[in-house]
Length: 105
Image (cartoon, rainbow, N blue to C red; front, side, top):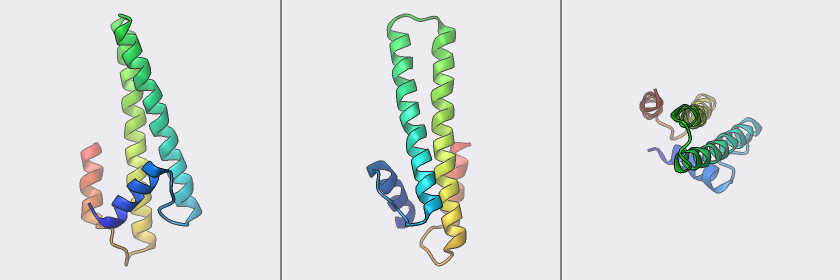
């Protein structure tokens, strides 16, 4: 993974800022919100499974977690792609971004 993309991921995980760009900061907040939502939904899945909830409820919760994680991943990659396009001299490898994108598909 490129250093720039690693820095973006690390900054998001630590709640920091990978770039001073306002759009990037807004995207990072959205990514963190989606990850927090997925975290809460996963807790609901675990609780439903532990309590013996109907399989329909568990599957619905699993679907919600999956979608939240997918959206966070796609947003992370689209943010890195935008940075790559606006800063073509950066260290982000477009081929690596493509591989990461396809790994989410």
